[in-house]
Length: 173
View: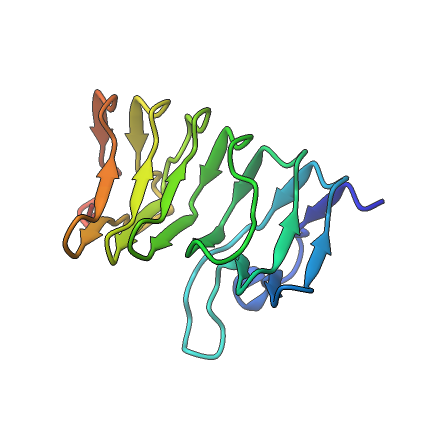
């Protein structure tokens, strides 16, 4: 089976992405042998090319990735209506984790590296990242968002001890 999805280092990576969607109770994307996912670029150039690759399971759909432990430049969307295993992830760098919906709880118990990531929690959802102790914004990332919007929305970063900005003046967290 498929073990790697790797963005090549040649050519212009700005308009390339891999988007995985399971959108229905009978939709299953079986990537159970996938161990490596590496997108090189998460730049958003215009509304037609979102930059980030994405993994979205909704409306009862399932994405099977039990061996995948790290991703770069990916958007992971959790809305409580689909099945996407997350407990095995150790690194989601330069990525977006979007958790939304009342009562939705997304816990990444062993995720330790979220450097360059944006974390978005809304609609009463909870995102828990107990293994993250440091967040660094790499020089190639312009903006990183740490956001909880709405009543009872919670972004739990309780063990973070350091937050490091990038080195130039065009940096925002």
